[in-house]
Image (tube, rainbow, N blue to C red; front, side, top):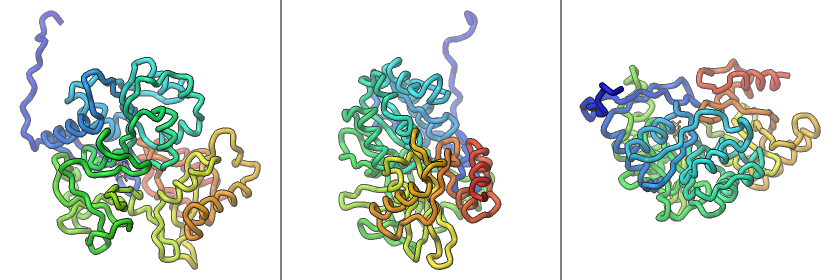
Length: 409
Ligand code: 7RM
């Protein structure tokens, strides 16, 4: 050590040199190797970290994502590091030695900014509010969410039980492909709406269009597209330029196709509705999985829900719902049928008769990627009684095997 230099001369790179290739979680198909380059990516993650997380010299920042997910790459490593932030890094489970591990970490290190995913928040809700209550969360001043639409129920729980109604929540929409956050509130500037990622980041142009590429009227659902390039955009799919073109640039010529559905309200807030491939078609009406799932999770017995469309002779598709119950609620054996009927009635009350699930399946767990995204295409395979598609990105392959057995009983 005494002989080595304290400085390490960095290697000079071209702005368009490849920085990394990261495979997407593959919820809707075979994983793709997303290629990012050097300068634009750094600019994107640097400025979004600074502005969206309102990073200050004395902040202790913690993003609890898996470091192998793009969220970890951009917002554990490159964004905070390039800003000289003080970060907490944790690699381990949230329930060891106890279900208060995250809150203990916040207490111990005095975390001021905490960034996590709705799937984690729903798990904490399932475990109950006693765990965060035991810990001092008084240092927190800002909360973030990423990875899926956050249902208003989970948003409120996070706001109350973790943020103690003092901390704004930034719901950040982005993709492996976008490299950095593109739609999100700016804390202190943007009026928050539970469940909405609010507005595009300065310099980002997003639109919601119909099948023909025309902008849809306010309040109407459609395809989320980006109309101008941005610094941290992907430069291609590794080894597959054809798939790159087909996936992102062929549906609407000249527009980047995100693959997500969204709608905009009167104040211009964006509401994300889930992946387009997951949208169900019930009696000719397009029903978003997110809306039905959000209605199910709104019921006090339900911890998590995933819904899929299943071929139906009359309706075209009927809704099949896979439901995980909160701790201490017995739907596994006990009164499954009765609870199922109550859940169906709850969805009808919240959304309408069209969204009534035909079947409800209770399950201890749902098949997810390592980043916590529900793999609805595998649930569709199960509901349709087909062989399972690509399962290589599942966090725990036994979950789907168990579900398949249970379903086929
Ligand atoms: C960061 C990340 C991308 C997909 C994306 C969306 C969904 C992510 C939000 C969201 C609603 C959000 N990268 N998604 N963030 N949906 N609100 N705030 O997740 O490549 O792994 O996934 O995730 O469908 O297209 S990812």
